[in-house]
Image 1 (spheres, rainbow, N blue to C red):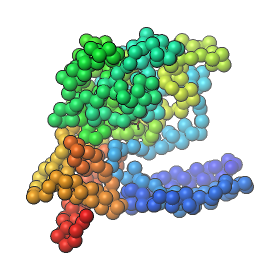
Image 2: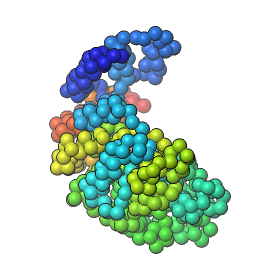
Image 3: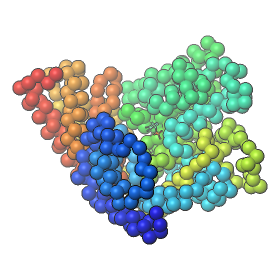
Length: 480
Ligand SMILES: *Cc1c(COP(=O)(O)O)cnc(C)c1O
């Protein structure tokens, strides 16, 4: 592709993106592709000869787009969001153009120093302690693995990387029964063993019960295990429960256990001073992760990982082959020593673009608006006799269940599942479910970059309308 063609298609693609965002509500939110349907339209072998870029764009529109689920649609209420935004998209284009490898300072000083400053900005924007130092990881799963590996090194006096795990005894990791699967996955990868993840029971609001945590740790100590790490969550994936950080921190500090906080979604709400109660007890925390790629309008991937003691992190990950020796080592941050990968993307640029383009004030008002939308939605649900709120609404996520009077719990499970499928099949909105106390519940997240009140009220109208259609069918035919 020569420079003229690049310019031509570059303009075309920017125009395509602008139109896509303008018209995004016209697409079915969840892709209607059937399994194998996309692959069936892709040639078995790559082309031997050069093909015009036009043909690629045509196939992108005809083959790829129907198989896309539209995460940037304001009618996307599923999972947690993976928000993008125009400034983030533009910065990502520059990142791809530069194609820099940000493994050490010398391989692009500006990338390393911008990353350092962006982590300071994020730390201060969210009110985290000023002694925290940060690094951008790809995902929260990786950040949690990094935390577990660092905790493992620390508890084994920095011997497990060099000598293996044999000398450390059986390590234990504690988290609530509602914690993200990345804790278990990371513990497996770290050689701690999935079976050594102790799932602590939760209180009524689905937050970790600190009394149960203390009991579990004491029990393990008496049995000869070595407690390694506690993972607390600010905003669990199922119901956005907030674990009591101060009470957990007091136990960790008393017992000398690493405390990691998984705030993948919830961390963004710390931009709001009125939400900082969630981080009460942060002085006990050793490591903390949140994802600007979820709720802070920075396209995937961009996960902000903060540590109290960067020296322990670096001691866990640095390894210095001859070809990476530089004269600046020790004077600057070589981020390949702050995590698992050697090669790293230049992710700080899109963060810079997002923070500068919105400004902290507009970021705050968008997040406040998302919290307000969740309250509006939960208010409408509470006012309806056929529906129930199933978990406290602290953040942007409303957990609810359709439970008309006189219907058994098991029957309501089936009806909610049917309702969920009918809504998602309609293409008009997309929401997902979870289970709480064994019951099927629906989750609706009001945090998409472009979501407005009208999208939420329309979604609620559609939910009620679809439920009543299912109800009337029930009278006529057996839905099972
Ligand atoms: C989404 C989520 C994760 C995983 O995030 P990735 O960045 O996709 O790895 C971890 N923990 C919680 C609480 C989450 O909600």
